Length: 456
Ligand code: HEM
Image 1 (cartoon, rainbow, N blue to C red):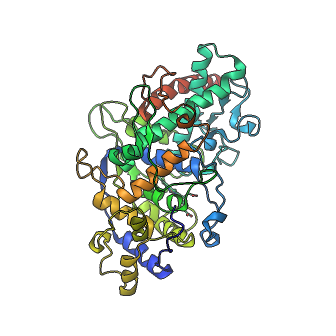
Image 2: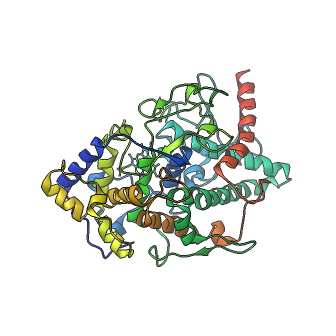
Image 3: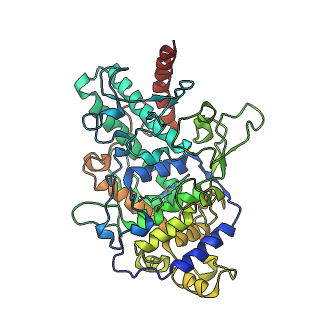
């Protein structure tokens, strides 16, 4: 987005000091305005858009030479892969009719718990392996599989010809997902004001107005490194230490929360005790779901202790940003004509080694800067101090890229039919994650009946 800006000056030593500072900063705060499910929807969206599997040390310095292993579109290629003809193993050819129109649901071999389809070693057979990284994002992936299957059921009831079922269902699923991304997820994480500035809501039957100032492309849209290497990694700060998984009893607090790692780590069969009641993650009933962690510079301890590779995720983020040659937060703020944060707002205190401190205050790595900005400026009048979202620089990058990728995708609803609103699933003219869960449950019921038959 800002190719002419110089790279951030923080070297490996300064980055190490910053990682230590972040690790010392204990005590994550809750963000009551954003239910915990949106953290993992954020992770799921990331895995739909961008994948750079190269080790940090081998990252190309020239962003134009990077390869994105996902399509830069909100098209759910992480769920559908290249479709039933090219990746038939993702689809159900035997247990539902017509063959190849529904996505395959797996079953745990121990007690037939519904799960992602897996190979004999427990690794998920899905369009993007990262959607099995923890049991929450894995079950979100399963939720989208079920949502697709429920949409197929709905179309069958409406008499849709067999030959049109898959394409019609995929199109409906994609549109509803895209709607949720820009109309529910985006305002929550960037704030309503920034979201509306980039995508001004439409009136009745009219198209929304889009304003992109900084994310531009010439031939085809792409995922900018400022987004994948820094701004969109804001979600790491929304992760909690532990999660309540099961529905709460009518009174009392229910079972104790479960630590994220190692307990909720993925890449293996789903145990019945980890099956999620989605009421704990999205607003499905009158009891509020658990909150996400506030977007700020306090990162939950499990992310300093990852089960695979370098255990410290903040170090991976900061080193990746350095290898990519990302500009500093101050440079990006200047390029966006936003006032830069003051030194004291960067919270690099005197426990940091003086030379490192001096460079970090002058030229702050973009990921850290964006978290500071959320901490300082990410409040809304209507949400109160605990309702944190990204600040002006981070929020604008995230909003312009998500909306821009939708605008630049010739098959998205914003390109094909900008005035489109949900409706074809009989859910009214809005659609939210809570509605998606409710709709997908129809397919879950069908699938449990099938599992019961299989057990008999
Ligand atoms: C338990 C939660 C999560 C874990 C354990 C996790 C872990 C990771 C790891 C290990 C990487 C690769 C780091 C590297 O080598 O550069 C990564 C990348 C990334 N993560 Fe997360 N993440 C989590 C949640 C999230 C969330 C909630 C978001 C956003 C809302 C997010 C956004 C990203 C982005 C944008 C990348 C770069 C992707 C790419 O271009 O390949 N992550 N994450």
